[in-house]
Image (cartoon, rainbow, N blue to C red):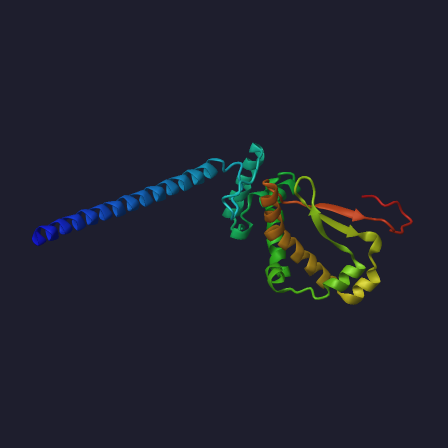
Length: 233
């Protein structure tokens, strides 16, 4: 009968609707489950990095593991040095770096007082010389001409992953160099270069080598250097 057919059709549409709703709910449930698993995996990965914090540097690229083996005694010395700097208000956030502080300690043979003094002098010099403005605003327009009379620059890395810096001293022409730049501008250029090395080159080399890099290898090419005295490196 027509009435019975309509009822059957309505029931079938209802069953299909229930089935579609059920399928949608199951699909949403699966998506929520996948999201939860992904979040848990991310959390476990983060905890793994934190557990390895004594061997992995805290870079801006947390997914890259950087080998950073530290000597226990050196680490204690850095902690003491850092505390001393904080107490004297001598630790700007940009210089709050383990390896920077360790380098200063080594330079003063881990004598805490002498290292603090050296650190304070460094901060004063940076302020007086205007290092921050030099890094941001200084433009060495004469770079190409300087290269003609003072060939130098970085070229690749060594087997440890450290950047290689080369100066061809036998090609240096001091008089011509001073005709295209000044001593002050040449010094600012080198200061800017060191700042860029710490801010950009060393982090990039560390990521490439997967170990902490904060030093360079320097090659002084003395071929054609004329001197009446023995040249000692």
